[in-house]
Structures are given as structure tokens and as C-alpha cells.
View 1 (cartoon, rainbow, N blue to C red):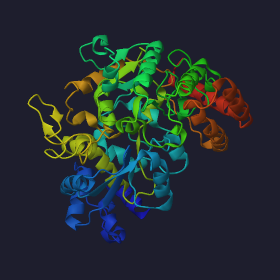
View 2: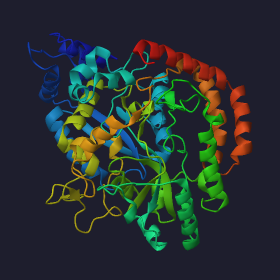
View 3: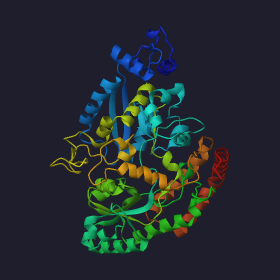
View 4: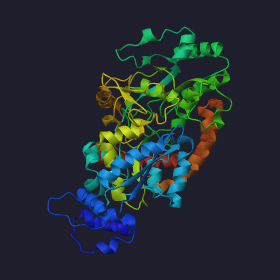
Length: 528
């Protein structure tokens, strides 16, 4: 807390002659009081102080991917650290964790006091992490206003309003797609070629990124794949039938009270009694009965794309967007064809808060943490390192301005082939991988702008007063979620059984609280 007090004094621009009072610990150097001349940038002043004292704080930043720490992480960390120590007077470590265990590991780090300053909050849930006390208030002592100016300038003010909980800002947004084409089925090209399916003639635009079709076509393809490749599983399952497989808006970041018609209505409704929930669950239930799904699916925590990459599975469900064909092909380690069974792009309210970065409430140096995030957001050299690795090792530039693998390197043997750039601070200032158009980020911005938008964009639900109800509801749903979304339970009988228990756990009361909060927000925001 002493360091944070010192940061407050610095951000206020106070000239104090008590330098010894905050210098008992080496890490205190970046937030100790310094003399700031009139018109001098406090962010530059704190960097100069670090360099003068030689006391460089260390910032640990953690994110998740599908395979854990890559082989080249030490080399990439050194290259990043060379820049951050020179430019910011900050030592840096990037910690990649496997998605299957990320939530558990990050929560353990946050509660145990292990060194962690910046972290991707999405697997924990933003509002949950805030209510658990894991997130630093970024307005404290004008932290983001003073040390995160690049981030502030990168978004409209209403984007930050949408992130606030109880009027306080706890999350840092990143540059990515905010809209989706829901319900896309990705299938490996090689398997479609094997059954003689002519996908190439079905593309409707010059980019050849997505084929719009219907579920009957997918069912026909799956039947042929199952017959042709009986030694492989047709479909790699995940609990994303609603979040990525529909235009339902999971307001508040949970399933307990949703907007079924979010573009036109602010009525909070019961997802589990809806037609779309039944249809999606029944879809995979039928696929499971036909043998398309591994009988070990529920216990298999391997990422869905990693299963396809293994060669044991042929397809998966996710969302679509500009450039997604290249992204998912990289994730799956083979060219993929993207079939979309819903034609309208949609932006739910949750996209604004679904992939935020947070500064640990117990970070020893929130000023340095903010400066690190701001640097990754504004510096193309740093963004390229964290997104793509080292030039000449992980990628080379092409004559037309793209990047691609060096000779002898591919997705299987690369020491740092990152496939989750949508999670990182600012992929928009990094290189564009071969296969995407060079204007991919302009297209993405246009995609975000033109998508059908939920009326609830900007709404956040503070569930801290309902944590007991939320926990009770989550405990019930956890017992049924994979059974239903992986096709192991008949939805006709299982959904009513689950509903009875959810109602007993307080579902209706929780939905009512969410409706009241949404109504209040809508009135204050002038949304009808």
C-alpha cells in the first residue's frame, strides 16, 4: 500500500523531498515521489527515476493458450525484456498457461500472493474477479489517465463506460473483433476432399473465408465423413453451443437470465426454456447417438482446436469473422473450411467485457503494470514479439508485406507460433500473416461497426450482492452443462429436471434482479 500511496503523490505532480520514505524496497523505485517540472509528463519522469536509481521493478503478465508455455518463451521474454528495460526501466516476464488449467492456476496465484501483475481475466469471469477482489481500480490516482494514455486514445469513451462496474473501471480492453457470425462449423479441407465435397465453388465473395449454409447440409457432410473415416471422431465438442453458436445475449456474463431477442428487446428471459437452447442441445444429442462424438468427451479437457490438430477429430463449432479461416487453420494445424449456419453478424453486450486484462489488486507496482500494457498496446515492435515471436526464427516477411513461416518451420515445430492474438493487447498494429488480406484490421473494424448490435451494449451486472444465489445456480448448472452441450443427455427429459433444481436454487429471483438492474441502466442510458 505504501507504493500505491507513492504513486498517488507522483500522479498528482507533487514535489516532495522525502525520497527515502518510499525506497525501502527495490520495487518501490518506480512509484516513489519525483520532482516533476511544469509541463513534464509524469510517465516519463517515473521512467527517468527508475533508470537513475537502477532499481527496475519486474512485471509478470499471464495469458492462456491451448498448449501451455511454448518452447521459445525464454528467448521471446529476453527480447521483450531488452526493450522494456531500455524504454521503460521495467523488467518483464510473460507467462503462458494452458487454457484447461488457467482458471485454477490464476486463481491460486491471485489468492496465494504469488508474483502476478497483469492477467487475462476472461476464464475467471470479469464481474466474478471484481467481486472476489482480484482487480485494481484503474481510476485510482488517475492511473490509466496518466500512464495508459495510448489505451484511452484507442477506444471511444462509451467502450470504457461499458466496462465499469459500480462506476469503477477494473478492466483494460484490447483490439479485436467485437462481433461474430454465430454457429460456424469448421471442417478440415482434407476430409472434405476425401468425400469429394466441392466447397470451393460455394464461396460467395473474393475473400473465400466463409460458406453460408444450413444444418441439413452439415448433417449430410457429417454422415459422409463418418462413413469415410470411421477411425476418426467427426465433431470436437465444447460448451459453446449458445455463447458462440447463437445470437442469444448472455447479459451479465452468465446463462441465468438472457436476452433471446437482443437487437429488439431488453426482456430478460429463461435461456433453458427457450427453443434455441433445446435445438442446440438436441443437435449434439443426435450427433452423439450417431457416433460422431468421443465417449470420453466430458472428461477430455483438451482444447477443441487442439483435438482437431491431433488428427483424431475432423470438425468443431465456433464463431466466424474476417480472417477467421486463417486463424482457425493455424489453431487446427491444417486448412479448414468455415461453414456458417447463421447469416447475420451479431455483437452481444458481453464482447466488450469478455476478454479484458486486469491489474492484480495486490500488484506491488500498478504504475509499471499500466505502463507495460500501454507499451504493448502502442508499440508495434512489442506487439509483434508477443503476437508472432522473433523475426527470422518464427516468421519472415514476404515481398507483398505479409509474414509467413521461415523455410523448415511450420505450425508443428515453431517454437513460438501464437494462435490467440485476439486475446493480446493490440494485434491491429502487428504484422499480418499470409492468407489474410493486408486490410484485415480495417475490415474487422467495419465488421464490428455493421453488425446487428444488442440493445444492452454498455450494461454490466454487478452480481456481488447475489453471490450466494449465483454460486448455487452455478453448482446446479455445472452438473448438467456438459451432459447437455456434449450430447450425452436427452434434452427433452434432462432440461425439465435441471429447471426444477435451478428454480429451487433461486433462478427466478436472480433473473428478476438482473431485469431490475437492466431496466435501471436502460433508463439512465436512454435506451428504450
